[in-house]
Image (tube, rainbow, N blue to C red):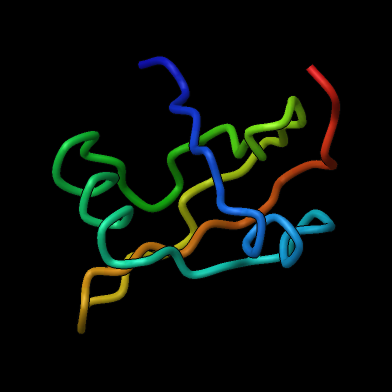
Length: 80
């Protein structure tokens, strides 16, 4: 399966600076990742800022209470 690219909002990009940083996605994006793309914890994704930078990331957790997805940075930001 091909890695999925996630275009993150600017406020999320500022939180995800270093490998190991995590952020919880909103309900709508989480629903798309879980139900449409069928991603699961451990799946690799490419986080993108929408301005040409991207970084390796992964699905860290999916919360059972509300289904929100948490992603974790796996590498530094790089220009495409």
